[in-house]
Length: 96
Image (tube, rainbow, N blue to C red; front, side, top):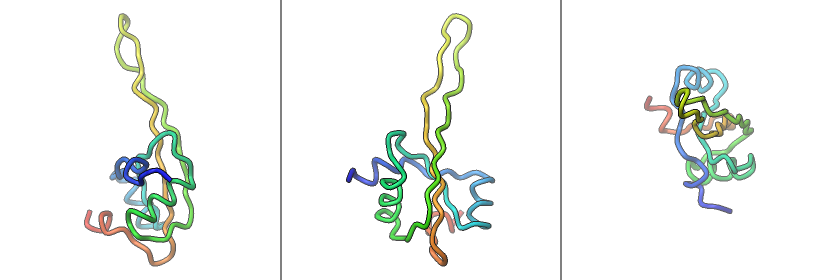
């Protein structure tokens, strides 16, 4: 297995992700685009010492950038929404 710190890139802290945390005990992360659900589950369990119930992934397309002369796109990213087991929490998200 790869290093968990290379799979989990950053937490996502938005109004929508905070609603998911309160209602469904789900937390969101930006993850490595080549990571699969099993690797994401193991990485979250290893980094935060919690039990993961379910992982959902979303590929976020890059936005068009530049103009007429320099057309281009931002890179593709991957978002993971992780449902934690009943009674499990991640302290980082509790302090926000």
